[in-house]
Structures are given as C-alpha cells and as structure tokens.
Length: 341
Image (cartoon, rainbow, N blue to C red; front, side, top):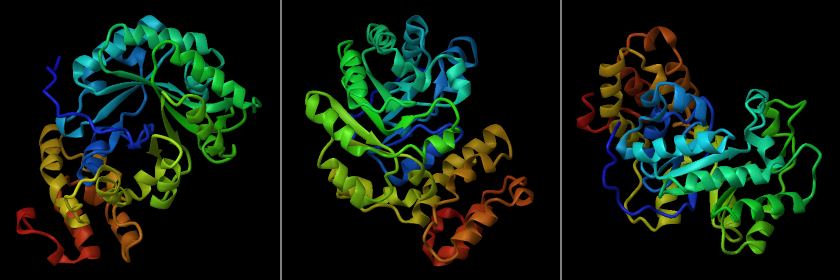
C-alpha cells in the first residue's frame, strides 16, 4: 500500500472536472493536470466491491502530480463505504465523494447512484460511516430530483438530512435523473437544467459548500454561476475542449504564471507517456485518446483527431506520432528542443 506524501495546502473547489465513466482515468487526469494546476480532478466512479474484493492498486493508484484529486465511490452499504473510504485515504486521495447521481440501470441494480436520493437516511448513514474513519473531506454528488419528482423540497430535504451527518460539500447536477426509460447520455441532455434550484440550496444552506454541475461550457457561464454558489464542476466540455481549462488558474485562482501553450502541454506530458509505455507496453491509445480535443477550435483540429485515432500507427507505440499530429496543426517551430523532435 502506498504511503501518502506530504501535500501542499489544497486549493478551494472553485473549479473541478467531473467524474466521467470510461474517461477520467489516471491518464486523462495527468493530461488535464498539465493544463491546470489548481482545478480539482475526480476519478471515475469506483464501486466499493471493486475496491474491497478486486485489485486495489489497479483501481486506486494515481500519480502524485494529480493532486488535488478525489476518489468517487459507488456503493450504499455504510460498512463497505467506510472500508473503501479508508483505503482511499491511505492511498493518498484528498477527498472521498459518494455518487448519488448516476442514473444507469447497471448502477441501479447495485442499489446506488441516483436511486439513493430516495433514501436520504441511508446516504446519511454512509456519510457518517466514512467520516468516522477518515480525516479527509467526504462529499456527495447528486441530482436535483429523480423521475417525476419535480419539487425543490425534495432536494432541499435530501441535502438537509445528509448535512446532519456531517457532509459539508454537495456537488449538484442541476437536472432530474430519470431512472427508467432514458439512457445515461439522454439523462445528461433531456431533463431540463434548473440552475435556480442549486442557487436556492446555497441560500437555504449558506454554511454548506454548494458546487454546481450540468451543461456548463464557457468561462462566461462559470463567472455567472460563481455569483451564486461556491464552485463549478465542468463535465464533458473539459474532455472535448480541454484547453478551456488553460484559463482556470489565472482567472479563478489568482495564479500569475502563464498557462502552458498547447505545444508545451504536449512537451510536458511526454515523460509520463514514455514512462507508461515502458511499463505497460505499446498502448499509446490509452493515453492519446484523452487528448483528441486539445486542438478544438483550431484549423486542422480534425486532422489531429484523425491522426491520433489511426489504430495502425498507434499500435507501434511510438510517441512521435503525437508530435507529428500536433506539428501538422501548430507547426514545428511551436515545439522546444526538449521534445526531442
């Protein structure tokens, strides 16, 4: 089991990248960390069963450079949540987050995710069980309602009950979760966004940290939300247009350091990429697949994506493919001699 290293003081959760299944793995998080130093990063949801009975290192290992980083748990049994949270803290995570927002049928069959919003007392028991065994923050990510429940009182009472168990941070996806009849993708698009309900939570619970999530894509929208709540969690826009995050440190954390250019980001990720290739073999796509959106908005972005999606070239495991794709967009002069190109 790894021994946690001494970490610097944690930045506030003004900006964070949402936990996204099949996307925010450790390679994705390392890539995002080259773009923003202070934004909070979240793991994919990891079930308590996978941690307790599975390969702990495979599910929990991460790089020190990822801090601040939170482990999101999927589960409902307080004892299992406590065991998993303890492992998360021992592994060095900065936060344990409980998933009460995922609407997928697979998650529902495990009796956790968004369906837990119907059982606030159980969620409170789980939060208390985790808080009793860890010293790091325990937070909850949830929706504003489930199925046809369209009452602000529902989410207000859920937050109030869980807060009584000691939870002080709530990440609120500002849509209902439809548990039957919609796919997870449709659940991110069809239920209407109701940001005002998240703002109302902050007014009703001023002592709590309230973070908003759902459909947020621009710096202007982030600025607007931060007038009402404590933090903003970005979801798929951070994945499809990651260079948006280059503005986060200076704009929201008063960091005077200039953001890295796209070419500098590629230079910065190269040592990690080579280390992973040496360790795991030629699986270049496991890292570069998270970088496809880096050139979003630039002429040649489509060519960049196509080059990094060429299975035949990627199978070689040659990291220079990444440079060749980027040079086609940015030009060779954009790169430093340290890149080895």
